[in-house]
Length: 397
Image (cartoon, rainbow, N blue to C red; front, side, top):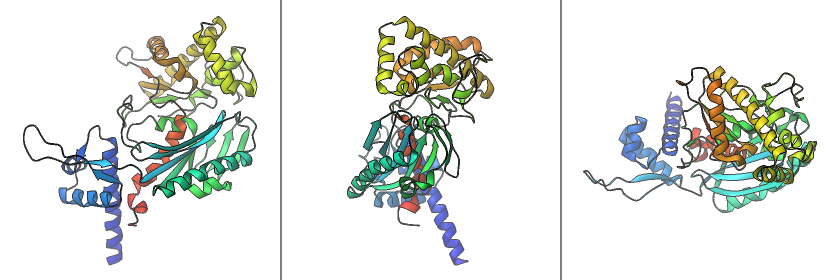
């Protein structure tokens, strides 16, 4: 009975630590022990004990006391302390591969990226390169006394819960057992679709201290994230919006269907339709830069391609919004280069497509985290392991 009681007490303490950390991360302003006790429903005595544990473990620190202008004694806010906890993000995409280390306070502690056409590559060769890239980053973190608590891996395809890449057709990979690779085993990686990881990167306070610029959506909001890239995905409901057909007689998509959104608005489709490059060459950074340069210069052929893709986006977004009743859309991938102007245009076109308008208004934004967001989201997936099980990494359990 004594052992059972001890286990229950540890589980409860672990849960309370997790709740406290979660509350600190999503807070929009500094919080004192009293603020945290009020927000979490924990007693002041319990919160004081939890705060002491987090401070002693180097996870949080006390900030400068804040003096109330009206009454009471100064309160001391608790702050996430940088340099002690990190998550690692890994990504293999159609245009390259890389790794990133992210601190619990949101600082980037290290980042590497290699731009390369990944179509038809050998997964064993690519994972070996990713392993060689990541190991020095891990070593640097260890020397600095920073503990790696978890890692996420973003892949442009379907990844199962038991770590199989069932379909990453734009890489030419199918039925790849991810646990065969050393870097995956060493970091005990959690893998997922790249669009899902990119969507996670947009959620303020998901696994890092909330930054003011990450306020386009709130943590409890439902939203759709469109990577508008090769191998599109979504966040907020099950399914691949990129493979929603917007024209039954449209071009053939890599998934085998005709008229998918990806075949109109994906990166490779846009570059190819503009006559700049084809197949694997269409994913190169040089081809993308040329496409954007010609668009900015007012090239009529590129403008026509962009307008056609925008129509396809409107059709797909409207179908998704009407199906799941979500009123916020974030545009990622190549479309982030078109800025807020495109978002405004899409909002205007969507009005006549949305059921319940004007009572239901759709919002379209370019996401706050736009440069390799899947890497950041993957690193946050790693950090969530610590947030959900603090004692497991603080040497207490």
